Amino acid sequence: MTSSAETGFSRRSLLGIFAATAVTAAPTMSKAFGFNRGAGDIRRLRMYSGHSGETLDTIYWVDGEYIPEVLAEVNRFFRDWRNDREHLIDTRTVDILAAAHNLLDVSEPYMLLSGYRSPETNAMLRARSSGVARNSRHMVGQAADVRMSNRSVSQVARAALACNAGGVGRYSRSNFTHMDCGPVRSWGG
Image (cartoon, rainbow, N blue to C red; front, side, top):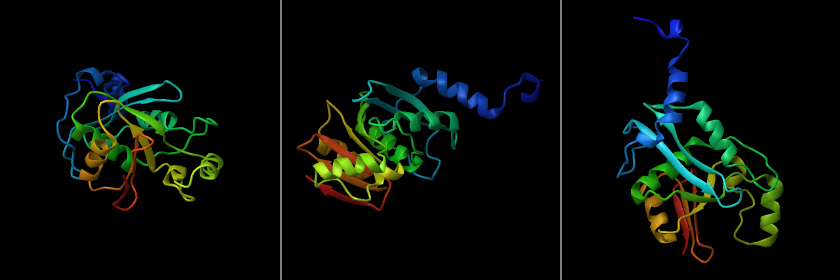
């Protein structure tokens, strides 16, 4: 029997290889996984960017562990597309997005409209709209604005609210749902 040291593979590198190749073989979850209860073997995030055209379909959590290399890809994907700045995205927000997606029981990915926002971008958006918070959780990597073509804002928001794990905003006129990992609260219509 050979050890991982003899083969040159560590547990972490094997998890990375698994994450890169197992997406097509990953089972579909019909219910959200529990938070901090080890209630799932994998966590998957499926999104595309409405601004850059990039896609992200990845397993970011396996057997109770986040995969750092995949989280780095998530950070890049969630970057401020206006100035290409990246920020560490809070894994709690990623978990809420993934859990809500599981509850929606769809294969369609989210369209990411806004992930991380630099302070400059937030100030510019705030000058254009009263709906942008001065101290937005987007500026600290703790929020995402998403939409789906085959689910309504209310359906996406109800799934996020069922997670009971953060803030959920309904922006029906603009056709998107806000999710963040702050205190449990909801707003909008």
